[in-house]
Length: 224
Length: 79
Image 1 (cartoon, each protein chain N blue to C red):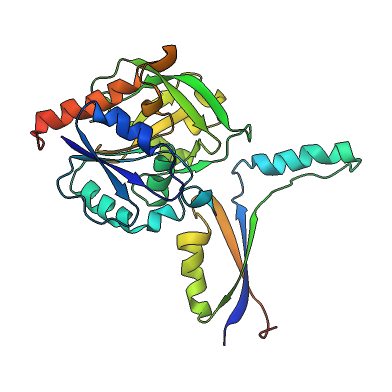
Image 2: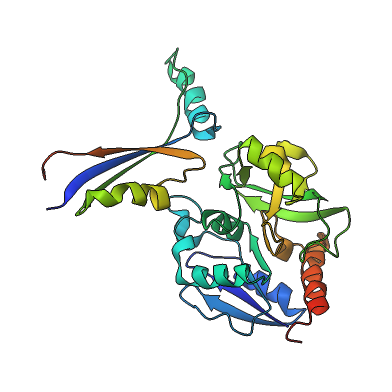
């Protein structure tokens, strides 16, 4: 199985993500100017501060050449996961609904958070328990979507994870920590599975996300 | 001839603005009483050959229309 991890100038979690994925298959690091995703079974947009978070997080990264290829692949059904800054990029690119605003606390928040898994039928959640614990670290993670559109998202079961503490963690509407596109193959999440691999006595639940992806791809007969 | 333009970008009404709140809460400590509804946005100044492109530039890059509104100001002459 082959996974692509996209690097933008200012990404910083691409190596942790690649290391996590390497437990499950081959990993190819992609540069923001790459346009070729051939041979890949899935793509991850990692965390960090693409283009310095200038203007708004993800606002400039969405115009990177690689994003055209990611959008094409997403439209063809390839699993695409955006983590933290990757989530912000997917929202700015219009591949996911909503926006991620500065935390209510205005602070960079860093903690292990408990998440309620609201949809366990997606390529990234099949192997998850009803509740998992992942690292979260961000300053602009307050998910926003107007109430009527959020209600529609909830009806379509496209809220994937919710902070168990609800809106208390960073002020996200409805405590939303992750959302999916209509088809379910594109997911954006603020918490970091690649930082929750069981090292140093921390949660190992990040492995559940990557294991889900692998079993979803195996079910589909990926590239082996 | 390039025109000078100014774009004011602000959080939409109803969108919580933690930066504005922080500023508002700091003011009484400096002795300024009675300041309310502080909102913090962005100001972009630029020069542009074709001002007809400004709307699209704002919609697609400078502002996020879901959470921000923008106001265009074309400035006089080439000063």
